[in-house]
Image 1 (spheres, rainbow, N blue to C red):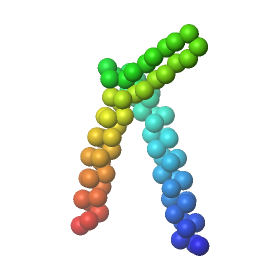
Image 2 (cartoon, rainbow, N blue to C red):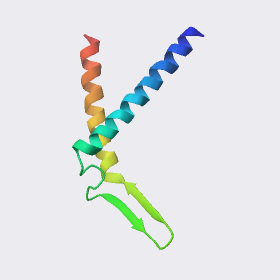
Image 3 (tube, rainbow, N blue to C red):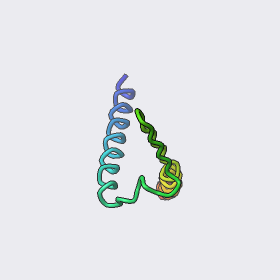
Image 4 (cartoon, rainbow, N blue to C red):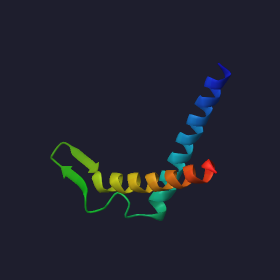
Length: 75
């Protein structure tokens, strides 16, 4: 049970730091979320925003960063 508690704390801290990073990234990179591949559909009573290009960019950068971290800790 102690191991499960530690896992929950680690997951919570990871979510906290990702959220903090996104808050800071929005101020440092104002173009993030406004890339050419981000879709915005506005109707009379609704708005749909689908940041496809931003999701792809964040995914690629996350994959590169994760690979670097894994390679560092494998040694």
